Length: 566
Image (cartoon, rainbow, N blue to C red; front, side, top):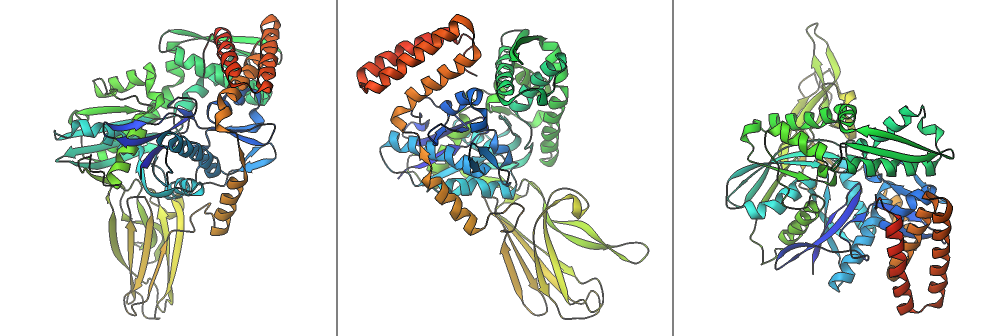
């Protein structure tokens, strides 16, 4: 039974599987490889996923959600009409759609998946991603970091040479850098770094901000439809920079058509702070790997945002050479996840590749340190597993009591890089009793074990008594209880999903409604008439007539929608 690979992206998601000819992308119900990571609810309460939902961002923004991957692992609520969703529930709906696409394409039930995550995703975010897959009936035993998946997709072609690879992964909402070394069928991750709140969406937002500033407006001056339309036009303008030095953003605000011309120099200046943020993780990853830029032999670009000439120029200047784009940056992570699925399933068609990964964050506890004045000061971070340690890994440290007759020791479980405990992320704690004795005479062994899926287990042993307490971090911030998870699964199971075989028709109507709102005068009138005639044809339920009319309507909409899809 096939193990599918899923790239759950901020902007777009994809699904792949392994074939005799290598990993292949599975097309969705519309015959396209990319499924926009957008969810909407229609007037009948049915769930729409992907391209149809994306069209409705303009016409029904209050019923549509996107970019929710950035909030994975939190309890942020997305309200779509009367329904409320957590980020992982929305992600589960995307995964459900991909799973159904795979089952339809392969002609068999799919029960297991490898899902990619940003390398810099935290423990809570990884668990939320795993739950999203499990909510729709998938076994998710393996998560793979996105840059590692990309390197794995390329690595099959580079496997005969010993080489160091840097993966520059800029997606819609996250940025990751991974440095890997490939030798003798072993792919070893040397270092990772990143920014979970930096992506193509931020470069689009720069253009939105320039437009608003030019017209002395703020976001609060726009309603949801106006803001959605402005972001769409900004996205189009951002992509036009690939071919033009000057772009024009035009949008209707408060009944008036407003526009702004932006040249590439102004755009580069306005994105300078974002480019600086891209540089920092690159430098940190190189430092952690004890490498210089000249040591890197291959640079791989991953993520749709790396298609931008601005980003490619930045990378070329930073490294002094061109990067690899042999594989479509939008698809390479999904292909790598498909390769990992084949490796996990021990597919006989693929040579075994040993894949190592690293812990992206430092994990440790809080201790008291002795000051020069003789007293102990609490609240200092004590690393146990350093960032970029190869995983799976298990490390143990011995800690002692700090005052006389201390009867218990509390072990905080922390994640981060800050010197003081309070500036790191609290994941949980274990408290153990110890016999009251003079300070320093009682001790505990604290063992941290971190696996390939980014799951942390902590065990505390009292040295004198042998008492052991352990936990697999379950009480991290925003954790969901088993009851909450069950409730989510039940809620998703009862949602009405728009029928797969009607998606082309629904997409055309959603596109027509978007074009109707974007245009005025005779064109708007024409669009309205075309939509009414198409809906009349749908009511006749004649498949041949519907298909013929659909093609004609699509051609007409293509001629009207001259700027293309965003």
